Image (tube, rainbow, N blue to C red; front, side, top):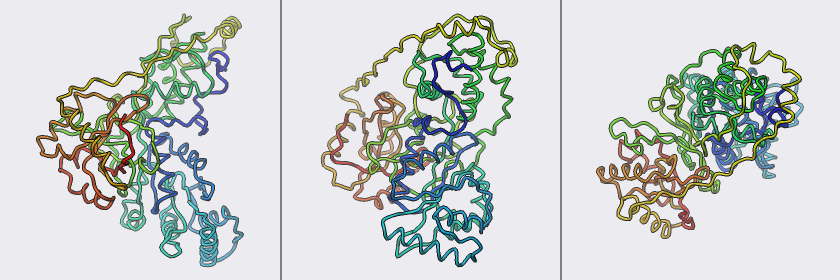
Length: 510
């Protein structure tokens, strides 16, 4: 209805997963890259958990598109399968006609087929959507299938996508064998208030919108608060707000349009993520760069460490940077959403795009159900989007030559130029943007702990912004670095989510 009014080619906020609208910010892009890395270069069961509407199914669909051609993906959209139905479903996806066969015959045929594929350089992975709804017996059968191997190599990998209830199910004593085999665990957190603007405009422009940013700051704030950062709810509210603005013949979405959308949506209250248990438990240490790292020390909270807003960083290579998504539930700020952990900064403030409005929307019925007049439609057809403004990237903040930050930057440069190939460091966190005074505070506290010389600071770029990555120590290999994580100062272990970071001697500091 409103497509022509806003110059759109298709609805921008469909709730059906469409990969053209995949938002790589808010950690989603990094988790996707890490999943591809874990499946192609590793072993072990992988688990991805997230609230209802957080984007798990979209991530699963994107994974299906990004997997290499030598990996056969078996996608199970219906988790309510019995043990035998699971075996038949997998056999069917592999092109095996085993209907009516005994379980032992099915398992033998599966192993034979997987071994033949492995001999040709092919591999198979089972992607289970809505895994929290899978019966316990079926989950146990997945574990038994994972045990199929030739020599030392597993023949089948398994990826579980589920709501936080999956963690509760796996915590049962009879599920401990399956849980112990989960090597990588990624948590999809709600998007923060700072990311709402970036997300809304990404979807608008992916649908063909060419005009200036058209969601007001107050509208974005209300969408974030009402949706609790869950993408499906954001999409529903944004869609209805666009319709309300269309009825008023305006191109600017304001707070009262969102209020009408909220009234019309009748959304049920959500459990606060801060009350979820086991939200960020890590199934194993990985070679991934952390996307959710407690940065309480960086924010200057010496006595009560809690994470700052972690950010999305583009991966330079899969070999040097992927993801370990974990944050203790005690470190998660409760609602309002503005304090909920996030993953990518809004690159710019919303541009001014104020246009004349006819009359305020007073109810859901008047804003959504009203039929537009001929005059309204003509006005919409004659309106032209304003040209888009170009905003220059910010310059790197100045650093005092005598500061601890400059000292560690110099030390990092020297370390990178002399480090041996294959060396590994421990990533503590990376920042929202380059704020030298905050990093200076973190380094002063490191100096008080007596570990300043173990801290290195890597300048990086996040969504076009200058930022820093804080790493700890240099180790000859990943095993030594894992031991190093266990030996970190206790306060670092509590405040951060340490992960391994592969050093590259050819890396240039920007």
